[in-house]
Image: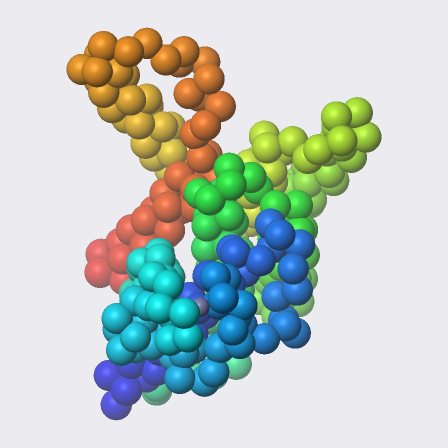
Length: 271
Ligand SMILES: [Zn+2]
């Protein structure tokens, strides 16, 4: 019976993934993500039900728009499948089963799903535009506050642990408002710091420290690869400028998901 539950969770994950692709495309363009009907970005044709089934639509349409035959980027398919897999793996490791489905596991599962929304959308937008969108950060913060309230009220956790994070978030937001007034644009660094703070609230300090270490390694590896490529091509591109192109939010997100899965697996199998 659990197999059926996990198939359902995978399908829910791909549906979420389908929403992520839409949000990643629309949020930076300041378009509505809940009301406007899905459309093809090339011919603007409204998409029907058969065009919107995650994974299957892409395969049946052979990666092309039904109306204008324009190629759909494989990114859509990749995000849907990845999201389905992450939902499935996390649910399995969180020990969500039919015989222990109660309000508690459902609430934990729902918070995790909403947190994964934050991660996927933040990562996708950063990968595409090198930007941590303010509205996405705010979503993360509101979700964090809701989670803290839940932990304190339902699970009787101590609130003191979290107060320091909340103060920190408020400080960064004030700083960000000042830079916004001064330079007329949101600071990328502030966005990245807010993202890491949201991670600390949801996945704990241990996972977050490992996430930051793994992110640094990924960035260093990336710089190294870039340098080797340059030496091979015998071109010299200023390293300083290349550093301005690194997607820190994207790497943070990937590291956070991997570390979270690792810790959940550790608890499930070894403790
Ligand atoms: Zn089209």
